[in-house]
Amino acid sequence: MADSTLCELLFAHLRISVASSRDAFRTPPPNTATNTNKKAMPKHQGTSAAVGVPAVTMANISVEEYVEKTRRLLELEHTAEVEQSEGVLRGMRPETAQRKGRALLGLRCVDLRGGLLGKT
Image (tube, rainbow, N blue to C red; front, side, top):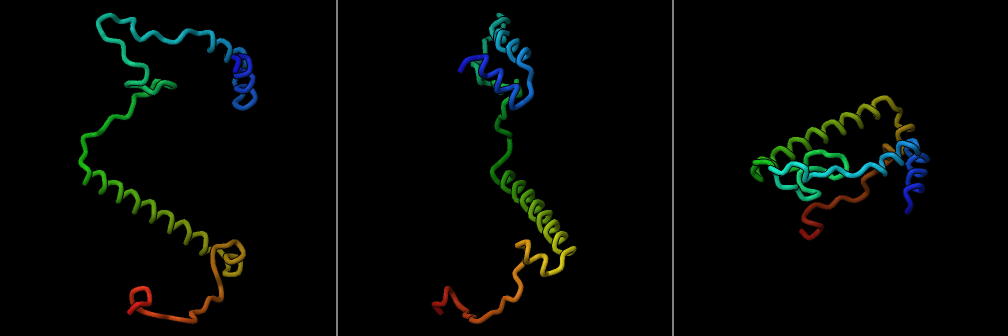
């Protein structure tokens, strides 16, 4: 794809001016080997290639700590979602909730079996 086509697409979808896009395409990429005291880093090591953000590195955290932290965060998310759903339903009449697909009215239990998948 030609640079001019990319510039036009950037303008059409992101409203980035064609002139600034062309200037960005003409600018040479940064040279990482300018400092002779340091080795040049491989292209994708240490930073995100597109935006210069430091790459994610492994944290010094055990699997147990990671699982516990993730579990706590999932519980918080679950609690927030339940509260949000209850808040939406509290302000609605049952018929409105059913019409919006948030509730099923008139359900009746017609058969009840106990045991492990009906085998006991």
